[in-house]
Length: 304
Image 1: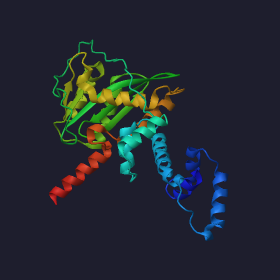
Image 2: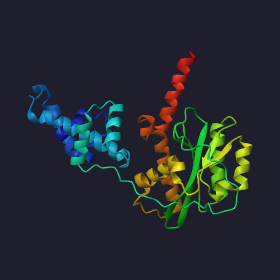
Image 3: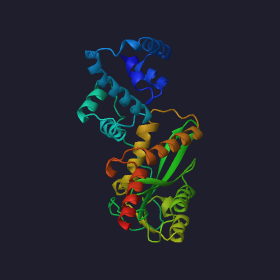
Image 4: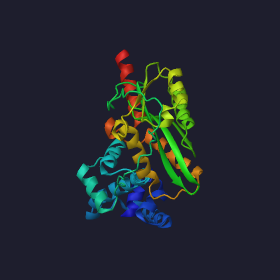
């Protein structure tokens, strides 16, 4: 029955991958295929009860392949939507039960401590965002933040810039020190990639890196308006906090990172996945890049 499934889907999934998922040998599949070719003149085999059961096995193979592809980040709602997007039709409850019965569960959320240094005497910007995270246009509101990752070589710090319109990470920077240069590099990357018009709001926490004279000077040079969260209120910058939580839970949690280089590679790989593939519930279960592409196509239709 497993070999029959592999044969049916040999042009959809790599044979070696199917054999691995179904726990059968490639050589055994080869022998099965040879037998089928020898018996091909006798006509198709009659339908049996096993044939009807194949649909569940087929669906489970698709589910397992997606679960592995997404590195365990997806629970059943995203798996179900991703299956539908790839033309595999199945009911929500059926996908949920199959995943539950086979122990396929997304990693759970964990709390991470805040490291913002707001105990400084630097000027702070007013809160222009006020938790209005739903933004209707690209390059109108960006948010930034810093997080940290432990490696055997010590801490690695990550600064990101997110466009709140699509939740896309448009700039990032990594280093072994949590300095103002870290956040400036992330901002520069975002600006050079997107070249936003003057008036963009850049929101961050009150950390000394963002409040520094150098960072504020860059905001002015790029024609941006600074906005900062209220003191000690992480919910004012919830989008970036959520991004960091997803990165750590879906990719870095329980992973031993021997070097900062390894950590950087994992982070960059996940950010690429996040921007290009990861389904975002806020975006109607589309990836940030797909969401922007669709919006651009819709705008062009209206102009035409």
